[in-house]
Image 1: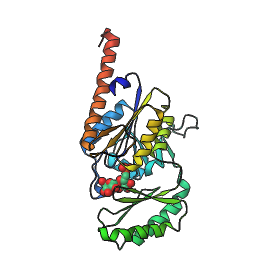
Image 2: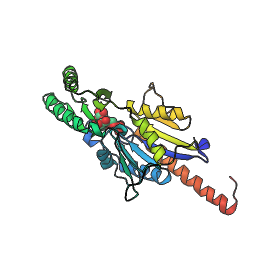
Image 3: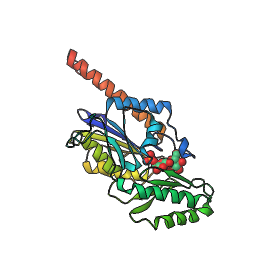
Image 4: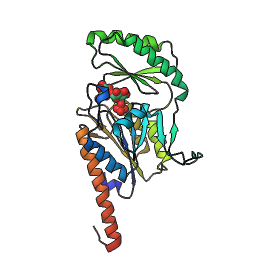
Length: 276
Ligand SMILES: O=P(O)(O)OC[C@H]1O[C@H](O[C@H]2O[C@H](CO)[C@@H](O)[C@H](O)[C@H]2O)[C@H](O)[C@@H](O)[C@@H]1O
């Protein structure tokens, strides 16, 4: 990777749950370690870095607590990015919001309330507000109650055209049916960051089904590194794998270290004419 990356611009995309934080029983306690935070901070000092999560953008930002990364929540449906080069900048010339599913918001809020009411009696079920999508967690639901839960979720959804159901890790997700996913979010960031040309190598690290859309985009571009986090063999569009968040940590630290050492040797070359 280092050989190929010489002279190219790297841009880093990271998923949150299962990538930067381990999968834990309680979604509200999926904290990121200070070590991981420091590693992401270092990487973001070296390369443009964005975190693309299924969570709400606010929630993932609260977990990550870094100001030098870009954030996208709701599987890429809620992006805070630099203004598109072609679009008029906002007054401060700072980041602008891109929310392609905004018109779905009133319906999503109704769905959220109905799901909370409908699932309240199912022990262990938990509804999470991810702003442009809703998660119904069933990690703590007894196997014999799962079918009832799924039926209840489907019965709520029946009244809302334009939404569909997907599955993640012990979670059902209700999402607006629009042609927008984590892959589109990657393309959006590349464009707004002015990094959609051919000398750019996107690195995307993720572990969930929804990250496959981003892997596909990188494969289609023919350049870059789609990396899946998994400890078992999986059918995936990723070309590389890391076993768990602790390997992600090591990878990120090495990536930042490599950039620092390669730029310091570059300046030595420039100053002293040193040949590696
Ligand atoms: O795109 P991601 O950042 O990977 O978010 C996907 C979902 O992650 C969270 O749920 C998963 O992680 C929880 C904490 O480790 C775990 O308890 C749960 O079983 C997993 O499904 C998050 O809570 C969901 O809303 C996200 O959609």
